Image 1 (cartoon, one colour):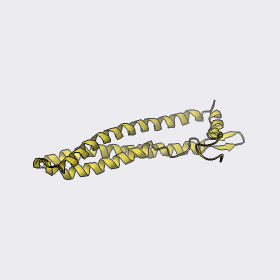
Image 2 (cartoon, one colour):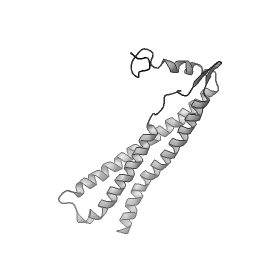
Image 3 (tube, rainbow, N blue to C red):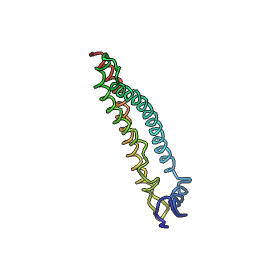
Image 4 (tube, rainbow, N blue to C red):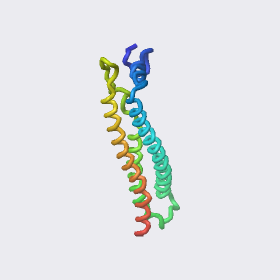
Length: 159
């Protein structure tokens, strides 16, 4: 088997062990723990928001499906366009949540070997960028989720 192939070979995962061991007694360990802790919080919040979006989307899809059935009340027909708009907004919010929880890098993949051990500067800079990006993505996703019921309320008030 290829040594670099994912999921195969006895060497998989061993490249990270020396990097983790070099963190013992190193001040960098605290910074990495904090950054990964922030990412964990963002993941949990995005997961919760994704669940809220799923609940709203389930109700909207049920409503849209019901609107095509016989016996659908004419008094609710005015809400069909906003149901489609809310579905799009919540779908976009859900996509942003999925971008937040996606693991898109190799853990400690930016750590380089030096004469005195390992250099974590690039790893820390990359993680700081990921935290910043995902914080902004969560902000957008949260506003998207909030926008859906607000749009529906405004639509209802204007009817």
